[in-house]
Image (cartoon, rainbow, N blue to C red; front, side, top):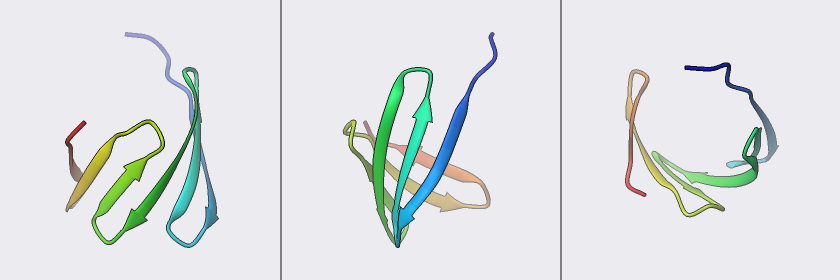
Length: 54
């Protein structure tokens, strides 16, 4: 297990950009559902839990 780097920046209402070792992605969020530019769909379940579909 190694050291991880992740930096997020809000770009607007419901839109954010994330920079990691693997590159940059942009995600849009509407309610509990978030869709990433890399095709990931995440559902927030509350209290720090989430479920990623792809």
